[in-house]
Image (cartoon, rainbow, N blue to C red; front, side, top):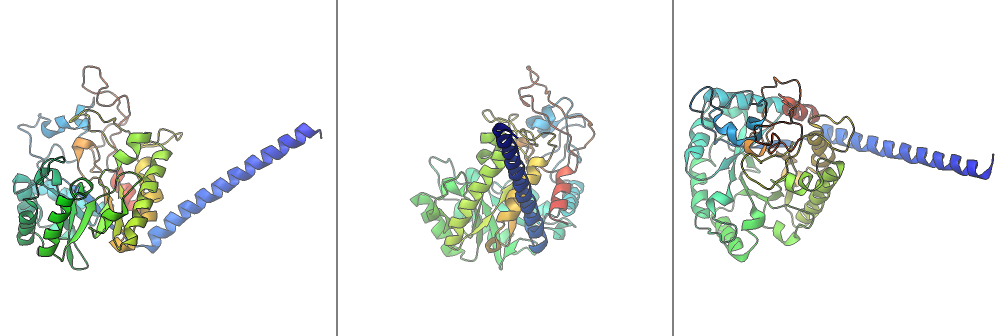
Length: 389
């Protein structure tokens, strides 16, 4: 054998060894995730929106006109149709779907004492099947505390007075260690400056027995000084710190894991829990401009299928980083936020082929030529299988 051939053979052997090592590491990682799901008991929650109203007639798309799926050609509607959030059959259906997926609780969006609040208080909590789940408030800071640049905290304590009167003592309200749980949206914006910290301190003085989960994590540089204000921290916006930047890629998953890992370490050092969040995808182009939409599979993996991104977020991020300090809680963004296309709620599942065309003048303004599948119950089934319900 001549010298060049020997070198080539050695080089090929090295490549094979590296490939085998990578395969073993990948197998170990998958096995690690599988073992964790067997060894841990998870508390699985999903953000829930009760703001939908029935359309004027059967042929009217109603609120789905503001959702990507209502602009596709052909449309991809919810399995339950263009529904009213107050419909008892819809509430029953959503509870059944959640139970199938292994979801333990909804964090219900709360914008004030309006129609949506009444739907939560008088229709969801009073539904005959309500006891099958637990419920927590998602406090919408942008609707209650004013603008991000010039916030006002006058509503904060009165709003929690209302929660204490109307929600916290309900038998199906979510509690951790006996404390009522409240998720607060965008704490990273509203509660890091002195005025916000002062308002939060006043709230804590009046209601010391709260378990507040702050939407506090975004990006790789989580400030350790922020974590001590909260019982646990999480990230509502999964997309903005992962696939928005990288597209639907493995690098996006790794970026998310890195952000979460750093935040968890800093939170745990001050006794605060960490709640990883996962999301199936994102596209809000039917309601606002500026954000690129994302399909729900990997762009950089051959033969990647619908749901692969979501499955990877569970296996490679959430399960590994679930925190006993926060009861191994994991959040899904979202159950039914159709306007941002983060929903896992089932579609009708009638279309056999994915869609890339929409009803815009260009035919692709909303989709940007990405493929969207009429996915049916896929995301509920993924949750069920990954968490072995």
